[in-house]
Length: 288
Image (cartoon, rainbow, N blue to C red; front, side, top):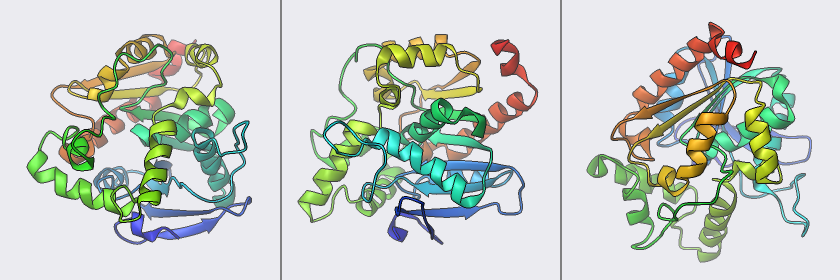
């Protein structure tokens, strides 16, 4: 169990393929289910606990090790798809027939798998700070490690003095700055290759674009105006915003990529507003 990746009580479950998933659970008295995947639940925890005010929320750790069913041609694990398959298997093991997917950046990647492969199981999908990329990349500033991990983290935080120490605690928990160089390198390679590329779930950018244009599940996008990663994929993001059927987009003025450190309650309220609009059927109307 990867209990070190969760701040607070952690649980574990073994999937049908033998993989073990670590997760946390909040809002158990609520009826409707939200699944929120993530590499960690430290700085994500305020968002999870905010969602748990209205929903039964499972925070599921997206693993970097263990057996895989979704493989590349060379036999390596395709983590973009495997993280999604893990959520499907988690639902099967837990008896969850339908849920709302809330993903912040990398946590939205399993949601894109689910809306493609098992759309009947996803009621609504909040894909915050990440859309699939169907156009050529504009720049590559966000993932630059110039100055080290600490400088990389600081660029994504608006309130750096308050947020950086919390982010570095989290980085240590997932192995980004451990003394073991091999672990840190492997973790970083998986994150850079798979965690920001939901378009890989479709196999080609053309197939992904068709999937977005024919979406039959309400999708809510949220971005910050000062997010370097948004700018790195500006053309793709604008295409997704304008072409994902039945979607809506919110921009938070002045917010950076790591908004869970700067305004977690504001993000939760944006999610609630989206879910409430979904309940009213606004986005289904757009889908015809």
